[in-house]
Image (cartoon, rainbow, N blue to C red; front, side, top):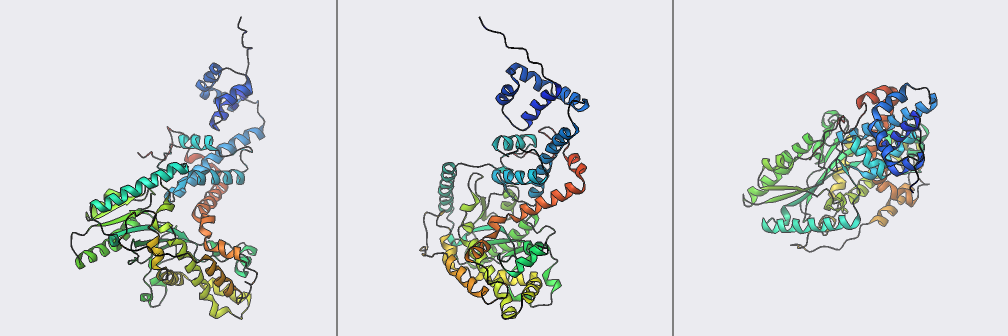
Length: 481
Protein backbone atom coordinates (compact mmCIF):
# COMPACT_ATOMS: atom_id res chain seq x y z
CA UNK A 1 0.00 0.00 0.00
CA UNK A 2 1.40 3.37 -1.04
CA UNK A 3 1.93 5.78 1.86
CA UNK A 4 0.52 9.27 1.56
CA UNK A 5 2.93 12.18 1.26
CA UNK A 6 2.89 14.23 4.45
CA UNK A 7 1.01 17.50 3.99
CA UNK A 8 3.37 20.49 3.83
CA UNK A 9 2.18 23.96 4.78
CA UNK A 10 4.43 26.71 3.47
CA UNK A 11 4.43 30.30 4.64
CA UNK A 12 4.22 33.16 2.18
CA UNK A 13 7.90 33.87 2.87
CA UNK A 14 8.82 30.27 1.98
CA UNK A 15 6.77 30.36 -1.21
CA UNK A 16 8.41 33.65 -2.11
CA UNK A 17 11.82 32.09 -1.48
CA UNK A 18 10.94 29.29 -3.93
CA UNK A 19 10.13 31.91 -6.57
CA UNK A 20 13.43 33.64 -5.83
CA UNK A 21 15.24 30.30 -6.26
CA UNK A 22 13.73 30.02 -9.74
CA UNK A 23 14.77 33.59 -10.49
CA UNK A 24 18.35 32.67 -9.52
CA UNK A 25 18.07 29.73 -11.94
CA UNK A 26 18.36 27.12 -9.19
CA UNK A 27 16.92 23.77 -10.21
CA UNK A 28 13.35 22.69 -9.42
CA UNK A 29 14.75 19.65 -7.64
CA UNK A 30 16.65 21.82 -5.17
CA UNK A 31 13.45 23.70 -4.26
CA UNK A 32 11.51 20.44 -3.85
CA UNK A 33 14.22 18.95 -1.62
CA UNK A 34 14.63 22.11 0.45
CA UNK A 35 10.93 22.32 1.36
CA UNK A 36 9.90 18.68 0.96
CA UNK A 37 7.22 19.45 -1.63
CA UNK A 38 6.01 17.58 -4.69
CA UNK A 39 6.37 18.61 -8.31
CA UNK A 40 2.63 19.36 -8.42
CA UNK A 41 2.91 21.73 -5.44
CA UNK A 42 5.89 23.44 -7.04
CA UNK A 43 3.95 24.01 -10.26
CA UNK A 44 1.06 25.45 -8.28
CA UNK A 45 3.40 27.91 -6.55
CA UNK A 46 4.82 28.98 -9.90
CA UNK A 47 1.33 29.50 -11.30
CA UNK A 48 0.41 31.72 -8.31
CA UNK A 49 3.63 33.76 -8.47
CA UNK A 50 2.01 37.19 -8.88
CA UNK A 51 -0.39 36.68 -5.95
CA UNK A 52 2.42 35.32 -3.74
CA UNK A 53 4.66 38.29 -4.53
CA UNK A 54 1.89 40.77 -3.61
CA UNK A 55 1.14 38.96 -0.35
CA UNK A 56 4.80 38.78 0.50
CA UNK A 57 5.44 42.46 -0.10
CA UNK A 58 2.55 43.42 2.18
CA UNK A 59 3.38 40.88 4.88
CA UNK A 60 5.31 41.53 8.11
CA UNK A 61 6.94 38.12 8.19
CA UNK A 62 10.39 39.15 6.98
CA UNK A 63 12.74 41.53 8.72
CA UNK A 64 13.64 44.86 7.20
CA UNK A 65 17.25 43.67 6.62
CA UNK A 66 16.08 40.58 4.71
CA UNK A 67 13.84 42.66 2.48
CA UNK A 68 16.73 45.03 1.84
CA UNK A 69 18.91 42.08 0.78
CA UNK A 70 16.26 40.85 -1.67
CA UNK A 71 15.85 44.37 -3.08
CA UNK A 72 19.61 44.64 -3.47
CA UNK A 73 19.77 41.30 -5.32
CA UNK A 74 17.19 42.57 -7.82
CA UNK A 75 19.21 45.76 -8.24
CA UNK A 76 22.37 43.78 -9.02
CA UNK A 77 20.79 42.08 -12.04
CA UNK A 78 19.53 45.42 -13.32
CA UNK A 79 22.93 47.05 -12.90
CA UNK A 80 24.55 44.13 -14.74
CA UNK A 81 22.05 44.62 -17.55
CA UNK A 82 22.80 48.34 -17.72
CA UNK A 83 26.52 47.52 -17.94
CA UNK A 84 25.77 45.12 -20.79
CA UNK A 85 23.71 47.76 -22.65
CA UNK A 86 26.47 50.33 -22.21
CA UNK A 87 29.00 47.92 -23.73
CA UNK A 88 26.64 47.25 -26.64
CA UNK A 89 26.34 50.99 -27.28
CA UNK A 90 30.12 51.06 -27.68
CA UNK A 91 30.07 48.03 -29.99
CA UNK A 92 32.06 45.93 -27.55
CA UNK A 93 31.52 42.23 -28.25
CA UNK A 94 30.60 40.54 -24.96
CA UNK A 95 31.30 36.86 -24.35
CA UNK A 96 29.74 34.56 -21.80
CA UNK A 97 32.93 34.72 -19.72
CA UNK A 98 32.94 38.55 -19.88
CA UNK A 99 29.37 38.76 -18.59
CA UNK A 100 29.93 36.24 -15.81
CA UNK A 101 33.16 37.91 -14.67
CA UNK A 102 31.67 41.41 -14.61
CA UNK A 103 28.54 40.08 -12.89
CA UNK A 104 30.68 38.73 -10.04
CA UNK A 105 32.52 42.07 -9.84
CA UNK A 106 29.32 44.14 -9.78
CA UNK A 107 27.65 41.82 -7.27
CA UNK A 108 30.66 42.11 -4.95
CA UNK A 109 30.86 45.92 -5.23
CA UNK A 110 27.13 46.26 -4.53
CA UNK A 111 27.33 43.76 -1.62
CA UNK A 112 24.77 41.61 -3.39
CA UNK A 113 23.66 38.02 -2.84
CA UNK A 114 26.48 36.32 -0.82
CA UNK A 115 26.37 32.96 -2.60
CA UNK A 116 26.00 34.40 -6.12
CA UNK A 117 28.33 32.47 -8.45
CA UNK A 118 27.31 33.78 -11.91
CA UNK A 119 27.29 30.20 -13.16
CA UNK A 120 25.83 28.94 -16.41
CA UNK A 121 22.27 28.52 -15.01
CA UNK A 122 22.32 32.19 -13.98
CA UNK A 123 23.78 33.18 -17.36
CA UNK A 124 21.05 31.37 -19.31
CA UNK A 125 18.38 32.82 -17.02
CA UNK A 126 19.83 36.33 -17.41
CA UNK A 127 19.66 36.03 -21.21
CA UNK A 128 16.05 34.86 -21.02
CA UNK A 129 14.95 37.56 -18.57
CA UNK A 130 16.41 40.36 -20.68
CA UNK A 131 15.58 38.87 -24.08
CA UNK A 132 19.24 38.50 -25.16
CA UNK A 133 20.14 36.21 -28.05
CA UNK A 134 23.26 34.26 -29.04
CA UNK A 135 24.02 36.98 -31.59
CA UNK A 136 24.23 39.49 -28.71
CA UNK A 137 26.46 37.49 -26.38
CA UNK A 138 28.93 34.93 -27.63
CA UNK A 139 28.47 31.76 -25.62
CA UNK A 140 31.41 29.53 -24.78
CA UNK A 141 32.02 27.20 -27.72
CA UNK A 142 33.80 23.88 -27.05
CA UNK A 143 37.30 23.87 -28.53
CA UNK A 144 36.59 20.95 -30.86
CA UNK A 145 33.43 22.63 -32.18
CA UNK A 146 35.17 26.00 -32.61
CA UNK A 147 38.16 24.34 -34.30
CA UNK A 148 35.91 22.45 -36.72
CA UNK A 149 33.98 25.64 -37.52
CA UNK A 150 37.25 27.50 -38.17
CA UNK A 151 38.47 24.78 -40.51
CA UNK A 152 35.15 24.77 -42.37
CA UNK A 153 35.31 28.55 -42.74
CA UNK A 154 38.88 28.32 -44.11
CA UNK A 155 37.70 25.82 -46.75
CA UNK A 156 34.81 28.07 -47.77
CA UNK A 157 37.06 31.13 -47.76
CA UNK A 158 39.62 29.54 -50.09
CA UNK A 159 36.88 28.19 -52.37
CA UNK A 160 35.47 31.70 -52.68
CA UNK A 161 38.87 33.14 -53.62
CA UNK A 162 39.27 30.46 -56.28
CA UNK A 163 35.77 30.76 -57.73
CA UNK A 164 35.90 34.56 -57.98
CA UNK A 165 39.57 34.58 -58.98
CA UNK A 166 40.53 37.07 -56.28
CA UNK A 167 44.30 37.62 -56.13
CA UNK A 168 45.88 37.55 -52.66
CA UNK A 169 47.13 41.10 -53.17
CA UNK A 170 43.45 42.10 -53.16
CA UNK A 171 42.50 40.18 -50.01
CA UNK A 172 42.35 42.33 -46.86
CA UNK A 173 41.53 41.97 -43.18
CA UNK A 174 40.32 44.90 -41.07
CA UNK A 175 40.21 44.87 -37.26
CA UNK A 176 39.71 47.53 -34.63
CA UNK A 177 41.20 47.27 -31.16
CA UNK A 178 41.68 49.31 -28.00
CA UNK A 179 45.03 50.91 -27.19
CA UNK A 180 45.82 52.35 -23.77
CA UNK A 181 47.98 54.99 -25.34
CA UNK A 182 49.70 56.45 -22.24
CA UNK A 183 49.96 53.36 -20.03
CA UNK A 184 53.41 52.66 -18.54
CA UNK A 185 54.90 49.56 -16.89
CA UNK A 186 54.40 48.78 -13.21
CA UNK A 187 57.17 49.76 -10.78
CA UNK A 188 57.92 53.01 -12.55
CA UNK A 189 57.71 56.41 -10.87
CA UNK A 190 54.89 57.42 -13.24
CA UNK A 191 52.69 54.50 -12.22
CA UNK A 192 53.61 54.92 -8.54
CA UNK A 193 52.65 58.59 -8.72
CA UNK A 194 49.35 57.79 -10.46
CA UNK A 195 48.45 55.27 -7.75
CA UNK A 196 49.51 57.46 -4.85
CA UNK A 197 47.44 60.38 -6.15
CA UNK A 198 44.55 58.08 -7.19
CA UNK A 199 44.86 59.49 -10.68
CA UNK A 200 45.05 56.30 -12.75
CA UNK A 201 42.94 57.95 -15.44
CA UNK A 202 46.09 59.50 -16.88
CA UNK A 203 47.40 55.98 -17.55
CA UNK A 204 44.09 54.33 -18.45
CA UNK A 205 43.04 56.74 -21.20
CA UNK A 206 42.42 54.81 -24.40
CA UNK A 207 41.82 55.14 -28.12
CA UNK A 208 40.32 52.74 -30.66
CA UNK A 209 42.63 51.90 -33.57
CA UNK A 210 41.55 50.46 -36.93
CA UNK A 211 44.12 48.34 -38.77
CA UNK A 212 43.88 46.98 -42.31
CA UNK A 213 46.43 45.19 -44.51
CA UNK A 214 46.42 42.70 -47.37
CA UNK A 215 47.43 39.03 -47.45
CA UNK A 216 50.76 39.60 -49.20
CA UNK A 217 51.92 42.29 -46.78
CA UNK A 218 52.54 44.84 -49.52
CA UNK A 219 49.68 47.17 -48.62
CA UNK A 220 49.03 48.65 -45.19
CA UNK A 221 46.28 51.24 -44.97
CA UNK A 222 46.86 54.24 -42.68
CA UNK A 223 45.71 53.55 -39.13
CA UNK A 224 42.47 55.24 -38.07
CA UNK A 225 42.45 56.42 -34.44
CA UNK A 226 39.29 57.30 -32.53
CA UNK A 227 39.92 59.37 -29.41
CA UNK A 228 38.03 61.68 -27.07
CA UNK A 229 40.11 64.80 -27.67
CA UNK A 230 39.05 67.38 -30.30
CA UNK A 231 40.57 67.24 -33.78
CA UNK A 232 44.35 67.17 -33.27
CA UNK A 233 44.90 69.05 -36.54
CA UNK A 234 42.95 72.01 -35.14
CA UNK A 235 44.59 71.87 -31.72
CA UNK A 236 48.24 71.77 -32.70
CA UNK A 237 50.16 73.94 -35.11
CA UNK A 238 52.38 71.11 -36.35
CA UNK A 239 53.18 69.63 -39.74
CA UNK A 240 50.44 67.02 -39.77
CA UNK A 241 51.75 65.65 -43.05
CA UNK A 242 54.53 64.10 -40.99
CA UNK A 243 52.34 61.05 -40.40
CA UNK A 244 49.54 59.24 -42.18
CA UNK A 245 47.47 58.39 -39.10
CA UNK A 246 43.83 59.47 -39.46
CA UNK A 247 42.16 60.84 -36.33
CA UNK A 248 38.47 60.98 -35.43
CA UNK A 249 37.03 62.52 -32.27
CA UNK A 250 34.20 60.75 -30.43
CA UNK A 251 32.94 61.15 -26.87
CA UNK A 252 33.60 57.56 -25.80
CA UNK A 253 36.51 56.86 -28.20
CA UNK A 254 34.71 53.78 -29.54
CA UNK A 255 33.94 52.54 -33.02
CA UNK A 256 30.42 52.94 -34.39
CA UNK A 257 28.73 52.06 -37.69
CA UNK A 258 28.96 55.64 -38.98
CA UNK A 259 32.73 55.86 -38.50
CA UNK A 260 33.25 52.39 -39.95
CA UNK A 261 31.16 53.12 -43.04
CA UNK A 262 33.05 56.39 -43.55
CA UNK A 263 36.35 54.48 -43.30
CA UNK A 264 35.12 51.85 -45.75
CA UNK A 265 33.78 54.30 -48.30
CA UNK A 266 36.40 57.04 -48.19
CA UNK A 267 39.57 55.09 -47.46
CA UNK A 268 39.20 51.41 -48.39
CA UNK A 269 37.05 51.85 -51.52
CA UNK A 270 39.25 54.73 -52.70
CA UNK A 271 42.21 52.35 -52.50
CA UNK A 272 40.25 49.74 -54.46
CA UNK A 273 39.30 52.25 -57.17
CA UNK A 274 42.91 53.43 -57.50
CA UNK A 275 44.02 49.81 -57.79
CA UNK A 276 41.41 49.15 -60.49
CA UNK A 277 42.50 52.23 -62.44
CA UNK A 278 46.06 50.91 -62.42
CA UNK A 279 45.04 47.40 -63.52
CA UNK A 280 41.75 46.01 -64.80
CA UNK A 281 38.47 47.69 -63.84
CA UNK A 282 36.85 44.30 -63.22
CA UNK A 283 39.43 43.17 -60.67
CA UNK A 284 37.77 41.68 -57.59
CA UNK A 285 38.63 42.46 -53.95
CA UNK A 286 37.71 40.87 -50.62
CA UNK A 287 37.55 42.42 -47.15
CA UNK A 288 37.37 40.13 -44.11
CA UNK A 289 35.74 41.62 -41.01
CA UNK A 290 35.49 40.40 -37.45
CA UNK A 291 32.23 38.89 -36.24
CA UNK A 292 30.93 41.76 -34.10
CA UNK A 293 27.54 41.41 -35.77
CA UNK A 294 26.07 44.54 -34.19
CA UNK A 295 28.43 46.87 -36.07
CA UNK A 296 28.37 45.99 -39.75
CA UNK A 297 25.53 45.81 -42.24
CA UNK A 298 27.16 43.66 -44.91
CA UNK A 299 24.41 44.24 -47.48
CA UNK A 300 24.82 47.99 -47.07
CA UNK A 301 28.58 47.69 -47.65
CA UNK A 302 28.10 45.43 -50.67
CA UNK A 303 25.82 47.97 -52.31
CA UNK A 304 28.55 50.62 -52.25
CA UNK A 305 30.79 48.63 -54.62
CA UNK A 306 29.87 45.27 -56.12
CA UNK A 307 33.49 44.50 -57.02
CA UNK A 308 34.27 44.10 -53.31
CA UNK A 309 33.15 41.04 -51.38
CA UNK A 310 32.71 41.83 -47.68
CA UNK A 311 32.46 38.89 -45.31
CA UNK A 312 32.82 38.25 -41.59
CA UNK A 313 33.90 35.32 -39.48
CA UNK A 314 31.07 33.02 -38.34
CA UNK A 315 29.75 33.65 -34.83
CA UNK A 316 31.14 30.30 -33.60
CA UNK A 317 34.69 31.11 -34.76
CA UNK A 318 36.93 33.08 -32.41
CA UNK A 319 38.00 36.54 -33.63
CA UNK A 320 41.51 35.53 -32.54
CA UNK A 321 41.71 33.32 -35.64
CA UNK A 322 41.57 36.19 -38.11
CA UNK A 323 44.92 37.31 -39.55
CA UNK A 324 45.24 40.68 -37.78
CA UNK A 325 44.96 38.90 -34.43
CA UNK A 326 47.59 36.30 -35.36
CA UNK A 327 50.65 38.39 -34.50
CA UNK A 328 50.15 41.70 -36.32
CA UNK A 329 48.44 43.70 -33.57
CA UNK A 330 50.59 42.26 -30.78
CA UNK A 331 53.72 43.21 -32.77
CA UNK A 332 52.35 46.72 -33.36
CA UNK A 333 51.60 47.27 -29.66
CA UNK A 334 55.11 46.28 -28.63
CA UNK A 335 56.62 48.65 -31.17
CA UNK A 336 54.19 51.41 -30.16
CA UNK A 337 55.21 51.15 -26.50
CA UNK A 338 58.89 51.12 -27.31
CA UNK A 339 58.40 54.31 -29.37
CA UNK A 340 56.34 55.82 -26.52
CA UNK A 341 59.25 55.22 -24.16
CA UNK A 342 61.73 56.71 -26.61
CA UNK A 343 59.61 59.88 -26.78
CA UNK A 344 60.55 60.79 -23.21
CA UNK A 345 64.14 59.55 -23.19
CA UNK A 346 66.12 62.49 -24.62
CA UNK A 347 64.56 64.87 -22.07
CA UNK A 348 64.55 62.74 -18.95
CA UNK A 349 67.83 60.76 -19.08
CA UNK A 350 69.83 62.07 -16.14
CA UNK A 351 66.84 64.04 -14.87
CA UNK A 352 64.61 63.66 -11.82
CA UNK A 353 61.51 61.58 -11.17
CA UNK A 354 59.44 64.77 -11.14
CA UNK A 355 60.72 65.65 -14.63
CA UNK A 356 59.90 62.13 -15.83
CA UNK A 357 56.32 62.44 -14.53
CA UNK A 358 55.95 65.91 -16.09
CA UNK A 359 57.18 64.70 -19.49
CA UNK A 360 54.67 61.86 -19.41
CA UNK A 361 51.86 64.31 -18.63
CA UNK A 362 52.78 66.40 -21.67
CA UNK A 363 52.52 63.53 -24.17
CA UNK A 364 49.64 64.57 -26.41
CA UNK A 365 47.24 62.97 -28.85
CA UNK A 366 49.35 64.45 -31.64
CA UNK A 367 52.29 62.46 -30.23
CA UNK A 368 50.08 59.39 -30.14
CA UNK A 369 49.20 59.77 -33.83
CA UNK A 370 52.87 60.16 -34.74
CA UNK A 371 53.95 57.14 -32.67
CA UNK A 372 51.16 55.02 -34.18
CA UNK A 373 52.40 55.96 -37.66
CA UNK A 374 56.01 55.01 -36.84
CA UNK A 375 55.05 51.75 -35.11
CA UNK A 376 52.75 50.65 -37.93
CA UNK A 377 55.48 51.29 -40.51
CA UNK A 378 57.92 49.15 -38.52
CA UNK A 379 55.73 46.01 -38.44
CA UNK A 380 57.68 43.59 -40.63
CA UNK A 381 56.21 42.40 -43.93
CA UNK A 382 56.95 38.82 -42.87
CA UNK A 383 54.59 39.13 -39.88
CA UNK A 384 51.90 40.63 -42.11
CA UNK A 385 52.27 37.73 -44.53
CA UNK A 386 52.58 34.83 -42.09
CA UNK A 387 49.51 35.91 -40.13
CA UNK A 388 47.36 34.53 -43.01
CA UNK A 389 48.87 31.03 -42.85
CA UNK A 390 46.03 29.60 -40.73
CA UNK A 391 43.43 30.77 -43.22
CA UNK A 392 45.00 30.33 -46.66
CA UNK A 393 45.67 26.87 -48.07
CA UNK A 394 47.39 28.01 -51.27
CA UNK A 395 49.78 30.92 -51.49
CA UNK A 396 51.25 32.82 -54.41
CA UNK A 397 54.04 34.05 -52.15
CA UNK A 398 56.44 32.07 -50.02
CA UNK A 399 55.81 32.22 -46.29
CA UNK A 400 58.81 33.69 -44.49
CA UNK A 401 59.94 32.17 -41.23
CA UNK A 402 59.90 34.80 -38.52
CA UNK A 403 59.72 34.65 -34.74
CA UNK A 404 58.11 37.43 -32.81
CA UNK A 405 60.85 39.23 -30.92
CA UNK A 406 59.27 39.32 -27.48
CA UNK A 407 62.46 38.53 -25.58
CA UNK A 408 64.56 40.96 -27.62
CA UNK A 409 61.99 43.75 -27.23
CA UNK A 410 61.73 43.16 -23.47
CA UNK A 411 65.50 43.37 -23.10
CA UNK A 412 65.58 46.58 -25.20
CA UNK A 413 62.96 48.17 -22.93
CA UNK A 414 64.75 47.11 -19.75
CA UNK A 415 67.94 48.64 -21.15
CA UNK A 416 66.15 51.95 -21.72
CA UNK A 417 64.43 51.95 -18.33
CA UNK A 418 67.77 51.69 -16.51
CA UNK A 419 68.67 55.15 -17.84
CA UNK A 420 65.37 56.75 -16.79
CA UNK A 421 64.74 58.19 -13.31
CA UNK A 422 62.38 56.17 -11.12
CA UNK A 423 62.23 53.20 -13.51
CA UNK A 424 65.13 51.00 -12.43
CA UNK A 425 62.93 48.69 -10.32
CA UNK A 426 60.96 47.55 -13.37
CA UNK A 427 61.41 43.82 -14.14
CA UNK A 428 60.85 41.54 -17.13
CA UNK A 429 57.36 40.53 -16.04
CA UNK A 430 56.34 44.20 -15.81
CA UNK A 431 57.44 44.84 -19.39
CA UNK A 432 55.80 41.63 -20.63
CA UNK A 433 52.49 42.63 -19.03
CA UNK A 434 52.87 46.16 -20.39
CA UNK A 435 53.20 44.89 -23.98
CA UNK A 436 49.84 43.07 -23.76
CA UNK A 437 48.08 45.15 -21.10
CA UNK A 438 44.81 45.43 -23.06
CA UNK A 439 44.38 41.64 -23.01
CA UNK A 440 44.42 41.67 -19.21
CA UNK A 441 42.62 44.94 -18.64
CA UNK A 442 39.50 44.99 -20.89
CA UNK A 443 39.60 48.74 -20.43
CA UNK A 444 36.28 49.60 -22.15
CA UNK A 445 34.41 47.01 -20.10
CA UNK A 446 36.10 48.33 -16.96
CA UNK A 447 35.11 51.92 -17.76
CA UNK A 448 31.51 50.84 -18.35
CA UNK A 449 31.46 49.14 -14.92
CA UNK A 450 32.76 52.30 -13.26
CA UNK A 451 30.21 54.49 -15.04
CA UNK A 452 27.16 52.35 -14.29
CA UNK A 453 28.14 51.82 -10.64
CA UNK A 454 28.62 55.57 -10.20
CA UNK A 455 25.23 56.24 -11.75
CA UNK A 456 23.64 53.66 -9.46
CA UNK A 457 25.37 55.20 -6.46
CA UNK A 458 24.18 58.68 -7.44
CA UNK A 459 20.63 57.60 -8.22
CA UNK A 460 19.77 53.98 -7.35
CA UNK A 461 16.07 54.51 -8.08
CA UNK A 462 16.84 55.37 -11.70
CA UNK A 463 18.40 51.98 -12.36
CA UNK A 464 15.30 50.17 -11.12
CA UNK A 465 13.02 52.34 -13.25
CA UNK A 466 14.92 51.71 -16.49
CA UNK A 467 13.97 48.05 -16.68
CA UNK A 468 11.27 47.69 -14.04
CA UNK A 469 10.33 44.01 -13.61
CA UNK A 470 12.50 43.26 -16.64
CA UNK A 471 11.93 39.94 -18.33
CA UNK A 472 11.30 38.45 -21.75
CA UNK A 473 8.02 40.35 -22.19
CA UNK A 474 9.29 43.71 -20.92
CA UNK A 475 12.98 43.80 -21.87
CA UNK A 476 14.09 46.98 -23.60
CA UNK A 477 16.70 45.26 -25.80
CA UNK A 478 15.20 44.05 -29.05
CA UNK A 479 15.83 40.52 -30.20
CA UNK A 480 17.66 40.08 -33.49
CA UNK A 481 17.31 37.06 -35.70
